[in-house]
Amino acid sequence: MYLIDISSIKRYLQMKKKKKSTKYKALAPYLLRIMVGLLFLGPGLMKIKALSGGGHPVVGMLGGIVALAWILAIVEVLAGGMLVAGYKQSLATIPLAVILIGAIILTKAWSDPMSLLWHLVGIAALFQVYTACPCCPFDKK
Image (cartoon, rainbow, N blue to C red; front, side):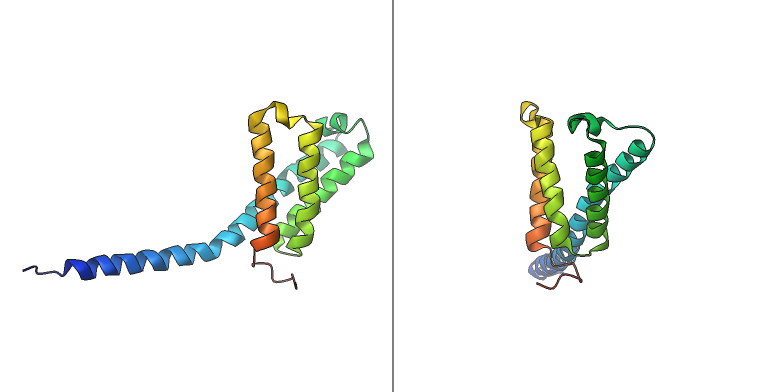
């Protein structure tokens, strides 16, 4: 005979695990949306700073068209900020996915497996935010 009922302790621990995991599962969409937004917001701000100071390597990738580099940087900042703020996330993910697809093509990322993998992970994260992130209070679908 045991002083402590082992089966009830196991049930309690399993219930405690379930409560904890559901609590953190509710945070996952928010964290994903914010992190993906920061993934674009930071580099976009760095591009704007570099472009206003004279140039950025992305200009060379875009065929020397400075205006296109400015548009790219502004879209990254605006769409990334929209994701961080949770404003119109479904609208913000589309241009960011186009930017990543364009980056794969322009940088020939398929020749570097790790670069290609990171771009594809970014596209997958954007797809997840677009389709399954219920955390945007401004989206009325």
